[in-house]
Length: 478
Image (cartoon, rainbow, N blue to C red):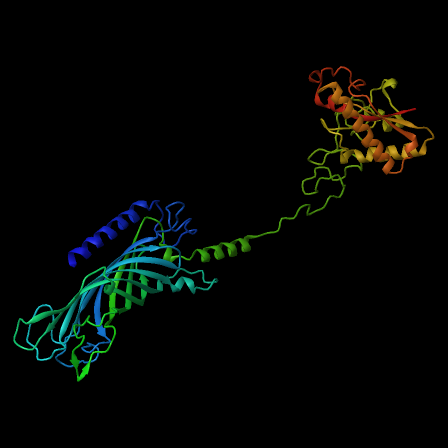
């Protein structure tokens, strides 16, 4: 019996302990808490906590529920203090639940008998039972389950509950009437038999001494399921025949748990939900609403005043990302007022050279129209003021006009032709939608055949501003 159970214990416990120690990794500061939960309780990926441990302890088993009970008679000549020990490999599956594979060994005593002396007794209830057991226990961490969500402090005491089943092997010796050296084997159960099944349940109070070592006081109630565990089955005791179905134990132990691994904390000493609640509280304290355009956009140029470098941009002027009105030819006259946008000229001549031929009228400027992005027929928001001026001008005149679309020289000419037609029709539809009589307008697409800057053939010969000027829609009187 002993050899068999010892072999099983070595086969189960030793590989599990080595696996637990070798798979833990990482070098962390010497602290009791960590930052997040394990990625998975059954694999070694993304682990932040240790979840393997080895526990061992010793104690006193007290027999109860049978005729020769050590708890029924406390006479001066009674010797009911036996001994017990346990060894287990522990695995935490979550912050609140784990499993143990546990080996128990001990000797329960009833009466004047023990393992060393063989003093004769005149009573048939004196006996001792040597037992070995292997069991699987569930481990519930009540302290983590019952913690309040507003409890952010670390804790060093924890209440655990245990319950499980396994196989029990024992030998019971009874001191018969007569002289010394007459202890007889009266009952025996081998392991891994149907009659060897037993269950146990109880609770333990743990104290965290260091991040690697826990101390525990534990009380377990062992249900043997066997009437002959104490060797008194079927005998008379105080005039009565044994009619109990099970001889049970109360096992009181003191033990220690060695937490394996190199992480900061064991999973049972840290509730991941507490960490989540704590981080949410920290984020809530640090949260500040982001206000966009806190100071508004006083000049309505589409650039917030918080970073607008020109707060008094004239209405209708196109601006850069800093809110500054565009001046393409950099002559000091913004494009909105510059009658020669691409040719530098003095301010007194509206940005045009002093050559009178270069000066254009307000009518010509209005009819020059708008520009488009590459490969696009979308009317840009910055062009709406120019088109609105065109609406007023056309409505106030008695003539009718062609709405002419053009492109730069990039791409295929057949594609550019269709693109120019779409641009012209989009502008025509905009004007009609905003009040122009449809009978005054005809849309025409001229593709890349009527460039504002003919020298841009091919487009690579010109800077981007000239190619952009060629991507236009403009007006001609019929």
